[in-house]
Image (cartoon, rainbow, N blue to C red; front, side, top):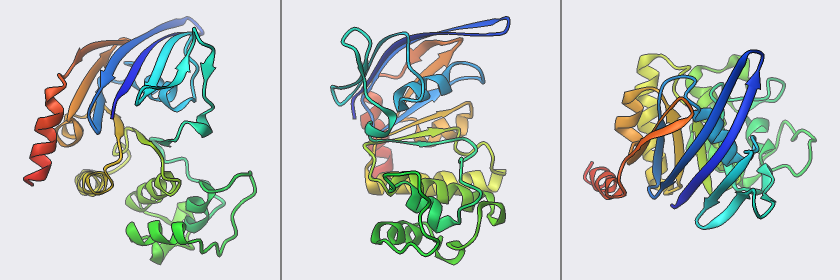
Length: 238
């Protein structure tokens, strides 16, 4: 994966002004944006996904522009091929697990049928061991089941890149460790590029093939390109 982000955005809320000025190029299949809360990580991820429009700059995925202020390019979020996993998972409370996953394949806002049995949906329900709870609603799920449902919904549409916003923050310590392993194994198997944001060094240790440290709206440090080779080698030997 090659992801280039060079954007600027000014946000004003009440008496607070925040200047986002982020510039980096990621070359790894696993890229981590690491920094404290309020550093600008989520804003950067939202800009990549097309949920936040920068004031200036450009975003390129595999040399294809997703956003370019000078050229007037702003690819709609739905057309960027980016799957965004929100921190709270953003599951639809009135839809069961099968419907939540199937919703990603809809071309309209109509809800999927409760008995949707499309091949792609069934594949991901099975892959994430969600068949036993396929008819359950989000309020009836454990934290791990909610995350797996959100991941299945993100992946069923075969995205070009997976964007994860603090994906383990809402889980207890034991579940965080388990879900890190499961996500790591899944990403390795699918070989899908991913950008994960976190303030937890344990996440960096598992997913940080290349790490971009962010603080106060700016990049403080970027791990060198060679880090990708080291990360790939360590996974291959595991």
